[in-house]
Length: 428
Image (tube, rainbow, N blue to C red; front, top):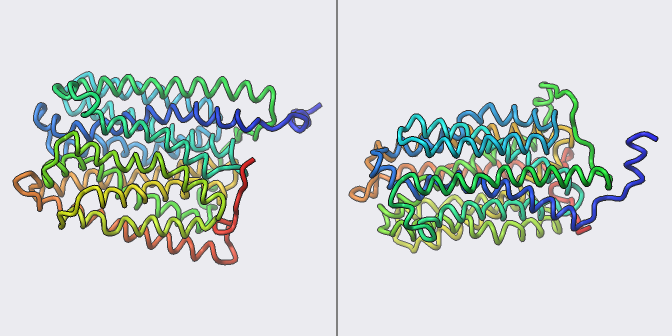
């Protein structure tokens, strides 16, 4: 009997098994997100103890993204070639090694090299996990599953941004918070290993979707449709407005609004807190009602005013950060699952890799640009207005995100639509 015939006689994985797989693989994302966000609450300590400028601090996050302009596309091909479980473990190990190297020396070159290695693994790990979730949940509760995955991952961000509160003693020395990050990076390996065990066990008992381990054709990159490219354009503008802002957010809150480091970290973590609670709910809603591109328009619209409110008004920071938190919950809950409806299953690793590659162009560019802008306009406690040019840049990104979401809605309302506005899924 052929393997295909055997798989037809096996049952589909039980719902509880699918959700167990989701939780386990999300542990790898938890460690990944913690390590990435460990720099932001440490920015003023790095400046005081190591003499780093804002441009240096921006470099530590930008260099994470720079190699991913190429690596995540390669990572997407690797995922499609060797399968999700092997790729997840490979990239998880790179995350751990990079986090470890970041902490061994106070020199910028060594720390930046560690962040570079971490970035090589981290973004490709996200692509691998995203591809795995699409494999296990496509045609089921896909948007809700992505939402739960992001909730677990962003718990890592929430823990990192609030580390000045729960690990305040560690911020007496620059290395100690980064040592905590190394400990959290072990989840990248543990989650990958446990996922490997669960998937191998499932392959023996249940009918699973086929791994795409065929040769990937480069020309596939040019066959993705217009809707895919609008989603990619929204991705780069949206994340460029969020993560580079968070790089400097705690410092901005302290110097321009007079908050403590602890409260500044809490305010920045509100994005994560909102996302942890609301992303699964928005995912569940979208699974039920469709209208995916319309929801992306609403999320983009929320981003346009929030940076200028922080730059020019004394409105309590809770207000713009809450609005940004809703956007940060809504757009990812809709955007990433939408790709699974637009692109064929055997090209998903490549599609997510390409999307993340282009996203990282924005992350690298805007971390460097905002760091330069803050230094150029002498942004500091003595000159809070120096932060305003950077905030205008972020606000413009929100406007362009709204434009691309509108173009996506127009495309998905036409004859070549992929069902983003119409597909609804019931829980199974």
